[in-house]
Image 1 (spheres, rainbow, N blue to C red):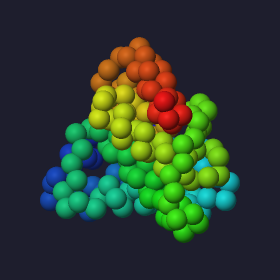
Image 2 (cartoon, rainbow, N blue to C red):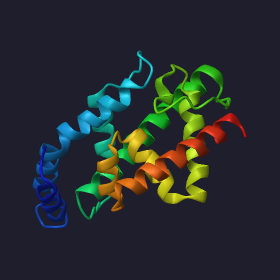
Image 3 (cartoon, rainbow, N blue to C red):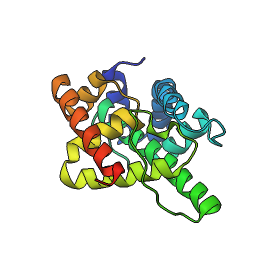
Image 4 (cartoon, helix red, strand yellow):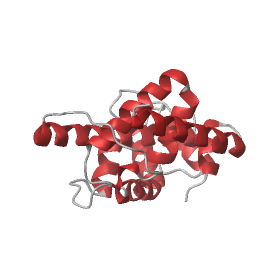
Length: 188
């Protein structure tokens, strides 16, 4: 795994004159880690999911680079953006599947631990996305913790580093966020 400094240096080079070379170097440095995150994320999706880990990484990476001048401060900032991009890809994929199959009806589902999206029905993922958006309105950092842990596949330690908080804070807010999401998904 590349060091934080390597990725941070390449991210700084994205603002320089040889951006294409910096983009190529960035993908070399982060591809295996992004693939690991994507594989972990897809393990909790339905078995017949039409996206594989490579497709998810490529789609997320394209979204990350879609802006004219993407800027990330450091490795953690980049991986936070990558986790969000993967989340968006999976949410949009689930929405398209629901529209095609069921006309987009929303349903309430119970939160059964970390692997909520393990059920084959994409409406669960959409319900979780809606609940996370509502959580973000009340507690932005708790929503970020959920996104990084659930969609980004980050550990408590990695999440703490990405958010520049203590591991204890992540554990506490993760527990509170899961309870809040459980209640929100139950319709309480």
